[in-house]
Amino acid sequence: MKKATLVLALAASLWAGSASAMTVQEFLTSANRIPRNPTALLRSDTRRLMNEVKQAFTAVRGEQEAARTAGRRPATCMPEKVSLSADALLARFNAIPQARRNISVTQAVREWMAAEHPCPA
Image 1 (tube, rainbow, N blue to C red):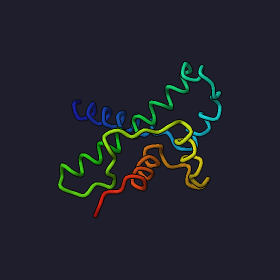
Image 2: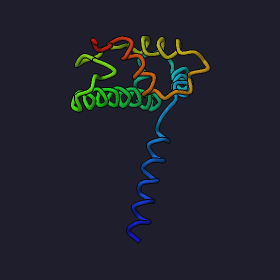
Image 3: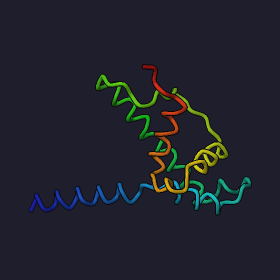
Image 4: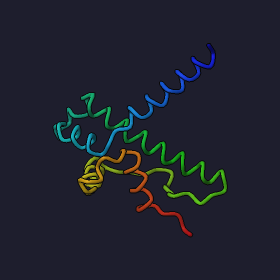
């Protein structure tokens, strides 16, 4: 019985993790529906997209720290604070070719930070 419960809990957590991974195309589709005005910050869609980006940066920063802790060279060397505007984020995501927009927001942020903040060799 305990084994079945453990398997179900593991499956549920994996499903929840994969279900929450938003693609760049989904992000852009949602972002394009949000009006560009001060009331946009009051919309739940805006907060959901902001949280998605925050989680992506947290994941990439966590990977960076885990690599350092393990004695490996991290893929990114992001500074403590990374400032970006909504326009810069959308421009970067819109620059991703249509054929690659099925990557997750986290993967897009990972690639962006590796290009912007590479680690010295």
